Image 1 (cartoon, protein in one colour):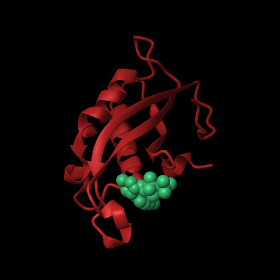
Image 2 (cartoon, helix red, strand yellow):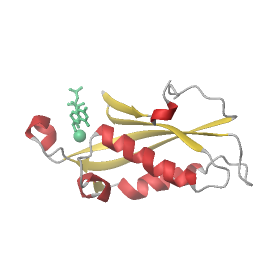
Image 3 (tube, protein in one colour):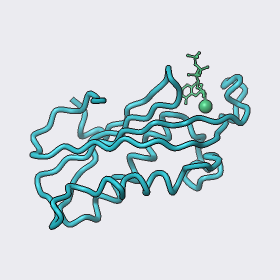
Length: 137
Ligand SMILES: Nc1nc2c(c(=O)[nH]1)N=C([C@H](O)[C@H](O)COP(=O)(O)OP(=O)(O)OP(=O)(O)O)CN2
Ligand SMILES: [Zn+2]
């Protein structure tokens, strides 16, 4: 599957798809039934770009992206995560959080790839795309 990504002139663009299962709730009556604890199989697409590869010929290791996100969230209650103590784990805040985690990770790589966007699907009918402001068209 392919996703709309921001225009860019990097030589390489990499996309990693991954899934994880997690529970969450939105602690506010305005969220209706979503204020009750319930679960989703989240689908994530992460878009990375850059001009230089590492000595293995990787822009970034696909497996590293999967473990970074899955190890943090798979089979957890998202509300208990340290990143969701100030605001609840909505699709929007999850997408931004995943972006921040990936951006911090790739920032430490010598070949300096960048994360362009995170696509997060929470249900068959609901998804969010998060892009940092500087990548917007
Ligand atoms: N802007 C947001 N709205 C809602 C969020 C959210 O994260 N951001 N989350 C929820 C619930 O957590 C729920 O899991 C998802 O809601 P919804 O798409 O309404 O789920 P349904 O499966 O019931 O959707 P249908 O299309 O009606 O089948 C609620 N809102
Ligand atoms: Zn939900």
